[in-house]
Length: 110
Image (cartoon, rainbow, N blue to C red; front, side):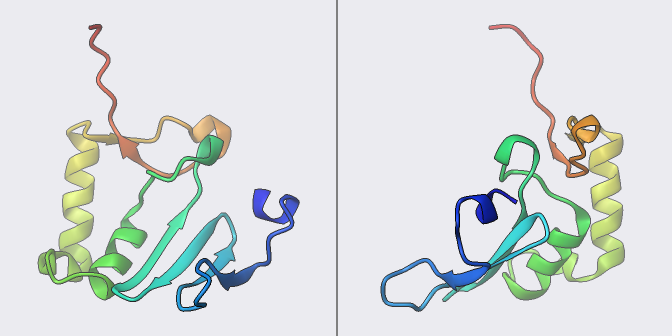
């Protein structure tokens, strides 16, 4: 809820022409871009790169035709679970009350 502490309005515009509207919700934000809406939740420590099946499905419905196979929720859920099973995505911040998934970080030393 940092947006409240910063004195930001729950809804408003991010551009001076007032054409790009935003709305904070729960632990996230939705921005209505001319190319389509973008919706996300803020993760642990303000991270923006977390994902979950619901947000991906919403994006497939509203945001793009590039991933038409994921307009089918069953296909998306199966692909998502396969990524979890293969260790491609993980929930590293569950203990910090962040239930979002993140790309698995390489643990190899450089």
